[in-house]
Length: 544
Image 1 (cartoon, helix red, strand yellow):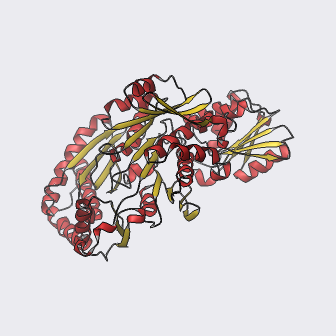
Image 2: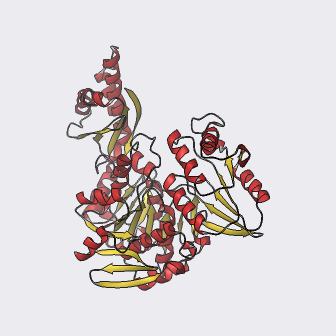
Image 3: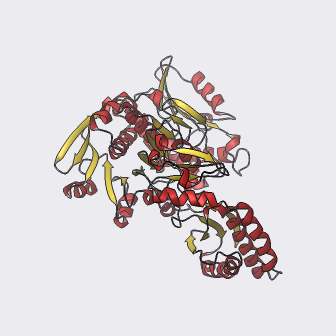
């Protein structure tokens, strides 16, 4: 067995919807019960010693190990993590036959840590926000009640007494959460454009930035709970669309406890080597956490073309809305027959179906980012965004005009097509088999004399996944491949290791050595591709 990590859980998460501390342990399946029992035996006396005897524990077996958690007050989660680390040190000592830390001595130190960390005004404000039915957001630096235009924020250690606040000032705004394997960022951007078309000031958090309308607050990957809190504290926000990635869900949980709509775009292979998401089933469970925010009051939106989501929905008891690229999808048909709502592609029309009523939104070739209807994955993203904004209260007319007004400039880095002296250059972020397959399906439908793919791959992907990417790429009928080294993405691999795997698989697929080139940076691969290409050729540039 091996200790992996101990950390705080601040929002609804894979184990439960409570804050606390989680401990990840790598071990064999037949060791899980013994590890969990030993941890409980070490943990309980310390919880009693610090006055936390009523806190609950949770054990979740996972592929390759187990997660162990206990609940704790939100104003003492660092101390809770110290308790978890203490408990593990006792487990290790017992397993190794070495002296364990002394409970009495450790308890004195941890009680002192708790005394320094606790923040009674924080707990009082949390209770008052709950009593008044408004959101409560907190982190190490700031605390807020309400959301967007109905919010106010204070420094963490300078909180007002709840009795001093005019609670009628505070309210929440419509909030949509977007997760899934592929299409998250594009769907968020589409939804943002639609909601903006309806006259809203839209707050957005995604893998590229946090912003309100065109005002970028900060660049970078803000798809975790920190990005959600930052956006919801902007006092000009009428409506928020929050991208929620796997990493943040695993490490901290959701950034909000409640939302009006939560969307899962799809589930496919990505990040499967990481603890907690080593199988597609585990990855689905992580993404499914967003449903916790809408099950009681809100709507869960799912892709009816994804078999895993269809099966998982059988256990869901909240309100559902489906979207599908097939008007005859059986899941959609049953749902609509029962009076439910769905968004489907019927021929070339995007249609909102609700019982017997049909509202045509637009044709797929009227949405610029579908490239005349060829890019079906963006048609699916458009359906998802239409469903999401509908559930956030946007009228059909604004959804229609929003979809038809979105240009590639509104979606930088995702399926952008340029003309470079007669050479078609396609730039996209695709980085896993499903995303690349969608991109290649689109590329096949676009005429070209020759095709070159320029791409790289992160080292934290398993060998089998890297080989699958290479096979998928070559199957499109490539004439040349430029592979970038991407040193910043080695992630534990040696120099040239990922390139070697890609090159070997391409040659197994029939590529000649002369057709494969190796470069340090993406920009060098692009420069080579532009020199190689002639009018009528296509360059597919996958830019991480």
